[in-house]
Length: 267
Length: 262
Image (cartoon, rainbow over all chains, first blue to last red):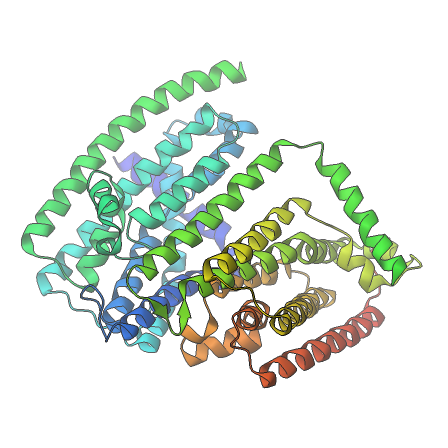
């Protein structure tokens, strides 16, 4: 265990040093990350005002709170491994990673954490600006706030596990970009990023209940913005745990098979 | 003018020849464009299941706007962006020297030197959307409206071109400008919606800082008969001024450029 902590400390240090070289990218990221919620809030606030101040229980300030919360959760849970994996496999970058005595997933986790730590001031600034500009109204209970962080951590673990598994597809397919793109769109709609899930057509809502995506974004975001009943919180945590366990099982299975495949190609 | 059109055609042909070697990317681009379009349409249909008009825009009018968004976006990504990205690269590597020694106008050459022909798909999709929106609306726009649409479309393209050229020209002084173009691309996405739904500060940014409003909203307004003469005249005037300003800035920058090669 202490061994793993040392590994993480070193990985974090390297990743932060690496990222600091691209400071201009921070500004780009600031604009990109702020624009999405600003557009969503504007669109849905306009709808709410057209319909007499409220749609589906959301007022303009409620929408603002929801989309700011979604942005925060998305920032905390987002990964980009599946964009890098195909290059790694194709160009043989995986071989040196496999030679290391630790599982390569740890390096990726550390890299993501480093990036998130560096972006923290940026995201804080964006939150503040959007909050003031759109008069967001957050209404969670203290109990909701207390459960937010654990829910966020589980959401990150779940999303990272699923997306790392998805990334492993690169062992079998050479062109994964289309699959990745489809995945991004599905997540955009079914995780609650683009709109609160209660706005989806009824059949789609039924589908989301059986998929892991809403537990990666919508659940923590609602805890923070509107608040959830005690029952909904318990259901949410259970669903997150079950999906996480399933995801971890799938990950180790896919990893072992993929590795065999990789050695076959490389040897 | 004829020479310039011939040059454009030559660059286009070269790009086709180059790209035909990679036919798989044609299918990838189709899938990518369709995913993009599907996402936009799905989002709009959800929005309009909760309201009949969005700030005065009905569903078919918003479809018109999305059509313009794809049309202009496709044109920008087909001709303007690849050339400007390459210009920034050339300034950094010093290969711009070779362009400057050619007998044709350098600004023109760098503007059309690289064409990503697959983006033509987005242009075609945008046109198809425009036709679809008109059929849905049930009536064709009158000749005056079509004329206004053509004029504003051209003006919007000119404004965006001048703006991007201005940004790319800054690379004569600052080396890392490719990031700026990425910012522009992500701001362009806000053009999927009429700019009048945004709060004042954001609308001001999208109109005057990053002129997305002129490229998408104004032509869509022309086609849906909500454009006033004042806005039309203002847009045309602004396009002329922008083109002139970017031209002057380019000339000024070229004089400053001393070459980095050898």
